[in-house]
Length: 559
Image (tube, rainbow, N blue to C red):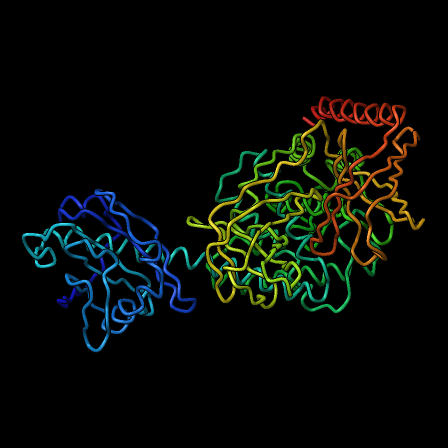
């Protein structure tokens, strides 16, 4: 093995991998990032012109341990020509034994710690040493610089999201389920922003501001009222104090991550367009657009949440009527119109659930270990350029990846129950990594999204208030707050009273149950449904569709 020094591997971001291959004449190139803490290697870019097949574990951390140690300590590029060689007491093995030459070139972060390496390989012995040729170095140096820059940007974004989520989870201790409300607010805010044709950059700001706007809860040991049109004097004072704390915390976080716009967005999210909000009494166009969007998204989240005071969840129809009433006083009419469009024409863009700040959900693991029950873990899931990462809230349970028989991810998106199947590829000390998600489409028959309160009568004659979020011709989905569950539920009768007072009784059985944060979601399949009840069920669904279509036509009056 020959040790080669590459000094000053720093230059402006410029080059591409293909330029290095053209200049060097090598067959394979890979850009790999190294996570020293979690002992993980991630391939980010790759070109294999000869379709050489590596062993499945060729670029696993433990297979490259000697090479990584040498790159980290010596901080020098080196060449491997033998299958195995020793240098400075470190044994290094080739990734591909049939390859004549492999070159490993390290790159570093701003603290001069190993961030990753460039891997070059050639099947036949090269005629000359490419690292001694200036033209090859001129091609390699910009690639190294680009790799360093990309890793730095990726880690900066990851630290930002990790920091925001960590503070949110701290605040969640004092106000349970706050994180769920924050993500719901971010979900509706994103939908409104897309209808307003805002840029991806503005949407990213909006998501972060949505997550940080209630961080002031970290200073309170009691639940505070969620946003609503009328507050008592005492409630208003508490919410103002919370807003000030949220603003101060956001200033500190945003100074670290150089996000100058977000604190102002948060400070203005309690203003009203008629000037009767706070803290400044700003009105109209004095209020930033992103603040207006968060204010409205908070209100939708409040109305869709089970309110302990009113014991009621609002229907979409109720929400739309309320938004229209408050347009031009509390809310900007153009934002109201965009929100109504989101409510009426909700786009199920599943990929957006995992971008940016991601979503919270439950990772359910079925294992081959008969001594353990299935593992259910609550946490955050985000998608990067390379994979999905699930980070549990709290300590990650000890799970052997080879004992995972089946893995499922359950999300509550706007009170809708969504399930995915996935394959976990890596269990890290603080997270799970997986590279694909397969949504399980369980609807099958005609169904509509519907927010309505109903009752479930169990076989033990216990009555539960349930919250239906989807009704179909063969089944319905509902949830119950976990704290209110007093028994296992297997079957029962669902009682629904439609808007016109029509009552319908639906007998059935539970075919799916999953706890997600504070809610337990159920799928209820009808059994022995009479023709009369079936007729009433479809009549009610068609009336709801007609009502929503009428509201869609009437929404133009806000122009």
